[in-house]
Amino acid sequence: MIFHHIGVACKNIEQSISTIDKIFQIEEISNMVYDEKQKANLCMIKTKNNISIELISGDIVENLLKKGINYYHTCYMVKNIEEKIKELQNSNCVLISNPKEAILFENKKVAFLYTPFGMIELLEE
View 1: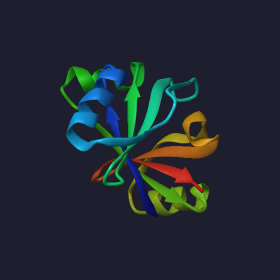
View 2: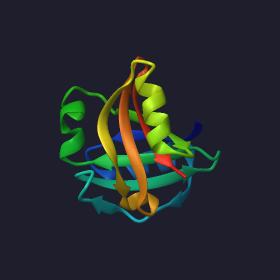
View 3: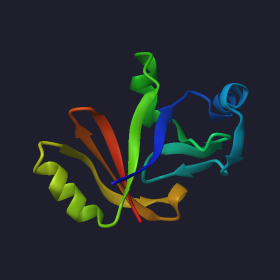
């Protein structure tokens, strides 16, 4: 697994972009998209020091935000998502979202698992 990005829940993506830019200096911003399969508004940014952050807003993160939680997940790139899911499940990780195409990542498959260290997203190469 290779680190790809962190996912941050936010109420308003545009406001979050403005705040992050002031702190970390944004170099790249993707188009904002609504992913029907994920039920979320999404945007990827890359900071000047090469950190990738996915901003997520919408119903999928509302409960987290109500609790004051902004950290959502850590994403890892994998060669074979199905094999990696089986491997992680054998290590007591729980699949919470089956693999599905993600519009933000050019319809590459993503899946979410709950682990002892929080939620992770797998992104297939």
